Image (cartoon, one colour):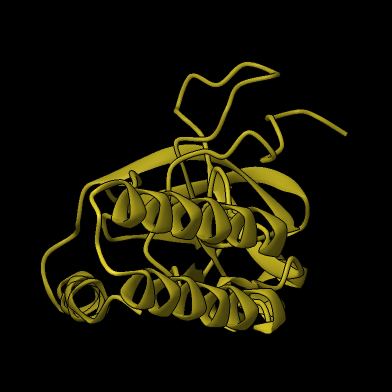
Length: 179
């Protein structure tokens, strides 16, 4: 959780609600279901971690024996490596990397959008706002919709605020006008 962004978003919301009329911009949007955080490019599996541990341990033992270190120390290094490899093999996957794929998201597009365009930024919204906004449409943006920035989306008399820091487009995000 990015507390600095949440504080910036709250301060921005207060300025919008209290200050003079802010700069407004008509922009297209699209709602969809996905993940609010970008997916990591690659995560290692248990087999990959286990293989790496065994290879590194084997190389360590061979180097120790090649430099003439006592066999007892090489055996100690081998047993330590074997124990760590066993722990790697039976350890559960990291729960922090598991993210639900059912989060309602809002994608904001550039003002001169054409069908097939990628979004400028994507952020999480509430389920109620997801139902209210529909699939695609146009809304009035207050602020600057870009990754990591603060903004809001006016739809009629309702103001939608991002719940997570906006991220850049992901290859799995829908294009504007896609069914």
